[in-house]
Image 1 (cartoon, one colour):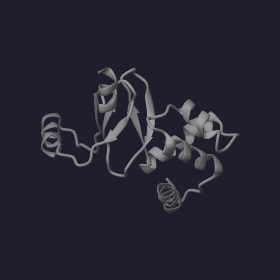
Image 2 (cartoon, rainbow, N blue to C red; image 1 turned 120 degrees about the vertical axis):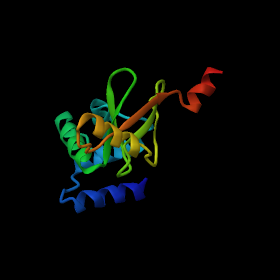
Image 3 (cartoon, rainbow, N blue to C red; image 1 turned 30 degrees about the vertical axis):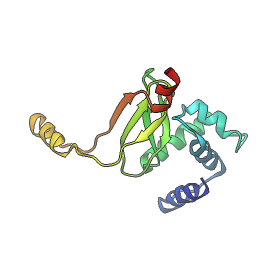
Image 4 (cartoon, rainbow, N blue to C red; image 1 turned 135 degrees about the vertical axis):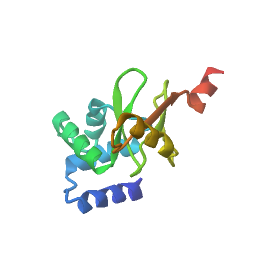
Length: 144
């Protein structure tokens, strides 16, 4: 975890942002989370690292982190969304409908499809994300 924290801290600095104590607390909360967290969960878990962490700070920091590509919004089956740390450049996820565990999918083979969408709609495609819902292996085992 320390190596990943150091990498993320460096990413903040390279993008001209300070890594304040509240931001450190948010990073720590996301680093130890086994599933995407709501902003309220991030605040609650981040307060372990920085007691004065406020919800407004969490929202502002998540917005900044999303712009920097550090976190991704993950849409969950219950209609809510959470936040998870992201590997830069990867916007595809498989999300467990039961435990909400997230696995990033590496590699994208949607190039031809996106080109087809652009041609059919006249849009210039500037980005995309893909999220697949399912039941993870752990939850499948628990059902047996």
